[in-house]
Image (cartoon, rainbow, N blue to C red):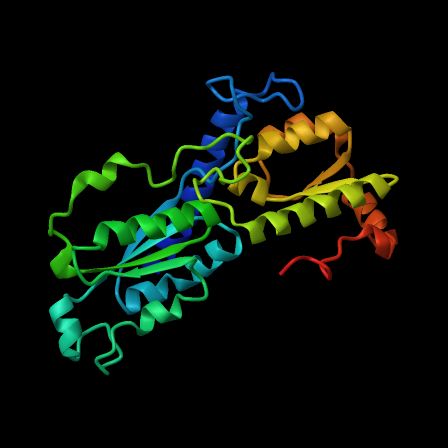
Length: 287
């Protein structure tokens, strides 16, 4: 039970840490006017982003399998958790030795494969040359996709020195200005195909919004995960739109939006009565 408890504890820690960091970040923008939330430099709109993550360490096989339910739950709830698994040395792995905590068939990656559907990135370290880059890769994935990541760490690599130069560059690049539509806040360059999809989604939202007589915005936990509660607040205050905040959600935003919130009964009534033309369609979305 201890491994299972560790997974759920890491999930819980990540949620609490996210809430704390988001509240600190958003609290500094609480007095800004709708649409005018500023960064510390005062030059750019405050951006979102996944802040904070949890982590746990288990042994291979029985340990990681005992924790897998918690990791799956974190994946479903979009909670970033790093699962570090201690595995046998690279020498033993290559020799396909029959080892404790394995299935006795000499295969060592079967448990990593079991995590393929419930993690956003996995790294099976086999040498010091690319270890730091691989670790940064899965950390970046966890902190941009808000999902668990998986790292296997062989015993003979634990004390191997690596180049510290990567520590000079943040795992998540510094945010960029909203005026630059060619680069995401993560620093990733936006491809033309992605721009087309984004333009389609924005146009579809505008169409639905303009045609709605009494719109309601449903807000869920992804607003916390991606640190955009302050942007949700600006939207609601600027448009006076009615909102329904799904649990769990930050008390910080709930307190700010109480005036605009409506009951779940009314929300269900509006949704059930909505005309097909008022719902989003993806049939013509660019591939």
